[in-house]
Image (tube, rainbow, N blue to C red):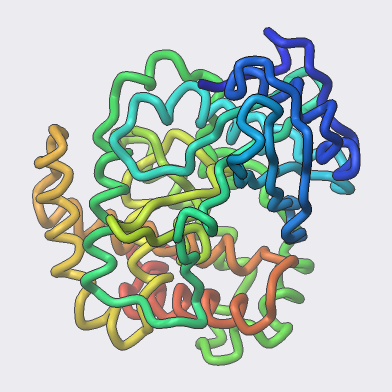
Amino acid sequence: MTTDERSTGVPIPATMEEAIDPDWLSSALAGLSGGAPVVSVELAEVIRTMASKVRIRVRFENTANIEHAFCLKAFWGTPGGGGLTTIREGRFYREIAPLTTMRLPTVPAILLDEERGEGILVMDDLVVAGARFCTALEPFTPELAVQSLDQLARLHSLTAPLETTDWLPNRIEAIAARPHYSAERLQALLDDGRASGLRSRTRSAGLVHDAMRSLAVRNRSKSRGLVHGDCHAGNLFQLPDGLGFTDWQLIQKGHWALDVAYHISAVLTVGEAEIHEKALLREYLALLERHGAAAPDWDEAWSDYRAAQIYGYYHWAITTRGEPPVMKIFTERLGASVERNQTFDILGI
């Protein structure tokens, strides 16, 4: 069960302190507790990235002997309160997640103020549930990649929400029309050391912008479905029964290859991706059909995969918040894949 601000009148908290107040939590979690008030809140951890994630332990009056573990996610201190990305993630969990067979976090409360572009998710704490979050700094095997590609195939084969999700953007078109940064600013980022292992041509901001525009044109004639949009290792969690995806801020409508090319090239080392990417792509196409969607033929799929490499590379080229070692690993893995797959040539750049 979920709640949202429109139906409950529960306000969006402006600060973390307001969000962990027992009175606010009592209102936000009334649908879960049956209206029982919160009698205790213990702060376990605060994680500040682009969004703040606050892990708490809560007890309700009617079950005071049971401790509930939640993770609050919001954009406190961020100009615009997270804006559309907050709303999209909340609406994903509210409208799309119930229709999928993916492994996802459970979200007992979703509170959104769409007019102001603010929101907060009250999620079950995956860490307490035994989850391990993946990272670029730890090994990720081709065998695990089969599991994560299965999760993506479940998303990409889902067609029911396509007619009712006009709020989802076509992100590749938006970036092509208006890149996040000027060529000068992007070049400075590419020259800051994150891409030092790549060829000078791959590090050219002007060519990266041209390639994104070319990919947008190419994809206009391609099928579109639901795309996670940011499926690097840091957005994966592992439970005893398998892998799942979190962080749905870039949920969009787009071509499946945006996710698959980004994912394979980001989670595997350069050497492993070179060896295994064709086999993994074939596995993904089989999984797509297993989940009820028509898969393209091999030649088309391989060409689309190679062309889409620029998408993930662009996103790590523009990243300004994150751990420098992680930023460097992802940028160089994705840039190496652009080089290996001759993405600029395929896109006519």
